[in-house]
Structure formats: structure tokens, C-alpha cells
Image (cartoon, rainbow over all chains, first blue to last red; front, side):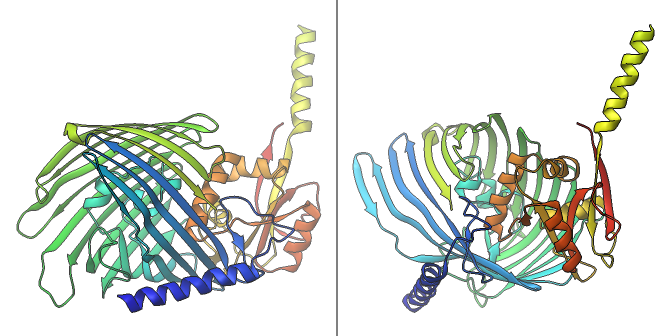
Length: 341
Length: 138
């Protein structure tokens, strides 16, 4: 693990060093915040994001430098690549019943590392570590691109957030858009096992997306197994239906899923519906209703979330939200500041 | 009554005069495409079309023609597109190349195989393949 960390750090330092040496603003395309910068005229664009968070619950508070991440990507002919390295909770201070604790997590995670090969307008294949294309929330799951600081439970307990393996994609844009994603992993996870919400070495899935004008509908099914391949462990099956309807002033998003093993239900259901209304150019109001029932965790909850987001510029977000839970001890208020560069 | 009819005809005439027409043009060997595919190309959802690497071209951000293209073809506002490209930056995609004038678009499309751009119909469009046309009423 230490060797891996050293390797990641070396790659990361090389990555940053190259950006310092070569990064320049091209006069014809000046730097725009949130759009990254090209390194000389190489097929390499750099960018990143940062997120700070404050959470206040009944008996606990936490302050965190939640994410600092660096992106590098580019394309050459039919190949393209994406590398994302991240410090997660580089600084985390938690206070529980008057007792404070400070943590510094200096491990540099590989959030995404993949290469794509595009055959033509219909077919693409990806290999490496990528965000599992399940639902809509998990496609752009970082704070600055989300409407709320928090993530819905359905995006955390139904499917593995990351997959390290192959992704095959078919898409047809001729009239309405149809997209089919095939997920395949039968190897070890890239990066440490605690970073993914499920430590999976085996994950297979299928997703079908249908888009007509502003309406997107998606259906995912899949199966995964935790732990190393040679160790016998419980196989989990999941299904998720998702909806995204987006207009200039408002957006409606919803996901509803379930997870089971061969023997029984693990998560009876988990879902949410969220509406975002842009009531002024820089101001958005958000309402999310969530519900989940996890047999495995022996937890069920109904949650109503009200949030407000101020974006002085779109790549900068100042958010506040209040969560009202049916499990009252979970009621909380969250503040965050996030920025993409 | 006569005054009313003349006024209506005059307004109708003004409307016709102000209706500007535009074309999306490419080199002659570019395959034809649906409007949904054209939209997907400009949003960089697809890069290749029938094995041709497509290079979409935009006019500058303050161009009225660009505003009209975004409204009528992409069906997106300037703010929606800003939001879209920041999300795409996270996904590893870049916005189309931007050129300053219609003349520059014509030159680029003429010289580079796979380039597509949009220009007013008052420009010389006969030397190009017209992929799509639309009308904008001011």
C-alpha cells in the first residue's frame, strides 16, 4: 500500500510539475474559471476542484477540507484519457459531545484513471477506473456540480460508485437518443478499498438511457461482489430507475432503486426526488424528498431537504441545506463552499 | 379599414425583410446528418461521423449568429451552455473551437476536412455542403 502511495505521489508530482513548466494561456483562448487550461499545445488539459464543508448535527459538528482534486485529460485521434487525483478529508475536525478530534488524511487517491477508444459515432470502449454510469447523480457526483452539499442515500447504498474495469457504450443520436452502457469488472479495485462505497473486485451491469428533448430516462441493473475475487462473499444484485428533466430555470431529478442477494432483500428501497429552481441568475432553491429502508443496516428514514445555492460565477458554489429526518437525531444543517478551476 | 390593411401589410413586409437565414456548412464530403446528430456534434457527445473526425466551429461569444444557432439548433441558452461546459470539463470534453468572423469560418471549413460551421446565407455558401438551414426572425 505504501509503495502504491509513493507511485501515485510520483505520478501526481510529475503531473503538477509538467503543468507548471508548460502551462500557458493561449491568447486566442483565454483562461475561463471552471474550464481548465491547456498545457502548451499538448493534448493535455488541467483543472481541478476544491470543497470545504461544515456539518452540524444534534450531538456533533464537523469541519472539513472535503476534497482537493486535480484533473488531467486530453485526446489524440480516437483515443482519449482522464486522470483525477484527490485528497479526501485532508483536514477533518469533528466534535462529538464536547470532545474534538482532528484528522489529516494525506493519502492521494486515484479518483478516476481511464482511457477511451471511440470506434465511430456509435461505439466506445473505456478501460480503467471510472464513475459507474448508474443513474444520473453518479455521473457528476462532485460538490461543485451538485445542487446540494449532501448526496442522496440511494447514490451511496445501491451500487458501487466506482468501477475498475471495462465499459462498453453504444449510443444512437439519429433522432431521439438511446444509449446502452455495459459495465464489466473482474479484477482488483484501483486504489485502496475503503475509498469506494463498496470494495468490489467484481461488478457487472447494464444501463439503458432514453433521451427525448429535455427528458432523460434511465434503467440500470447489475450485480457485484465485495472482497478479493478468490474469497467467497455475498453476491448483490441491484436495479435503479432514474429520471432527469431539465429546463433553463428548473430541473427535476429522481432515482429509485433496490438491492438484494439471492436469499433476501438487502435494501428494500432507496430513492429521492429533487427539484431545483433557479429563481434568479445566481440563486437556486432546492427541495429533495428521500426515503430508504435498509435491512442490512437495520435503518429506515424519510428525509426532507431544503437548500439554497448561491453561485457568484457558475464554477463557484456557496450552499446551505437543512435536513429534516424522521430519525430526529439525524437532523442536520450543512454549509459548503466549492469551486472548480 | 384601408389604413388598417396597409399597416398589417407593412408590418408583414418588415418581418420578411428582417427574417435572416443561416446555414450550417461543411466540406462537400461530409455525410448528411440529422439535427439531433448536429446537436450532439456541437455538444461534443460525438466526435466521429462515418469515420470523419468532425470539428465544430463557433463564432465569438457576443455573435448574434451564434446566439441564434444556440437558440434554434441547440435549444439552449447562454447560461445553460456555460453550465454544460463546466460539467463537460469534469468529464474531459472541451467546447468547440471559436473563430472571430464568418470569413474565418468559411476559410477553416474550406481548408480542413471534417470542419463544420454556421454562417449567414448572404455569404458564399455554394462552395460548401449545406447540412441544415434555419431562419431567425428579429
